[in-house]
Image (cartoon, rainbow, N blue to C red):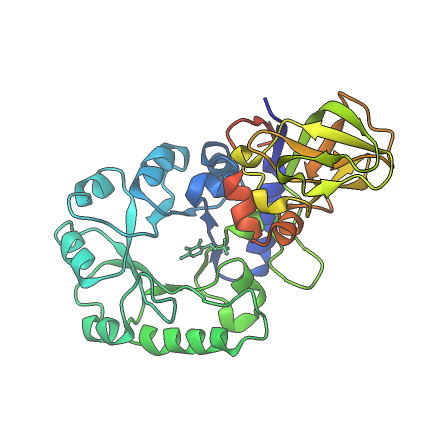
Length: 345
Ligand SMILES: *Cc1c(COP(=O)(O)O)cnc(C)c1O
């Protein structure tokens, strides 16, 4: 095993309760991409036990896999339905999020309820405002009408308020139908972004939904890996592929059996920091497929000790900053070679 990935299900449940308490409407749980890489088979029951009753995934197969774990809960498929899938949706009581007239036509004959997705600026999936207004409720059974925010992670961005207004202007044509608006970040944009159902994902998993402010969410993930060897380097010796780092003083280099094949991004080369006993240690040289090197000269680290690659105070958001990506990509990339240990649940 390349490392140990500890996932705190109690913290995920705590985060869901915190979000739910802040939101007057219902609060769902987005568990697409295997619950952002953390394991939907474990996360879904933990959220269900916390009384979450609305779940979202991206694909039908993901929904079928968790259906029995969340009995009676609404289970929505954000990417909608394709030809030939309607019967599978119906058989498993899974709800498609419909985003086009073609999808609607496929679903209509089942007579079952759906969620309609209004596109208010993402230009990916969803009906246009004109299509939705022309459609109206039109004999459809609708659980929700929803839209998705483009820039909710930029609290001052007027785009969010414009989207909320566009959503309101269309939903007046759907009297009595419940509305679903905010993702994690949207839940922190104020009362104008409350709705009958919020759809947080990232914040459940410890990503900060209030950028630039202290993270109100509890840490969920800790990733550690043992030191395989300590190399003693003299000044002038180099580390790793292409010799991108050179020792300027007598140095001690800790070698970990973690690399980009574990989702520890190559972009972290010469950029990341791990922790030894709480003290930051810099990544030096290139991240290789299965190995990574850290300068532990200023510590007492020895072979067999562990370095913490993700943990309290340096979570997915911090590593993402070092890798030039977002915390979502850090979590969903977490590899299959880590031993996974679940806490609580
Ligand atoms: C992924 C997704 C969410 C959850 O977003 P977070 O930023 O992770 O909270 C909500 N709604 C839709 C449509 C999504 O695709």
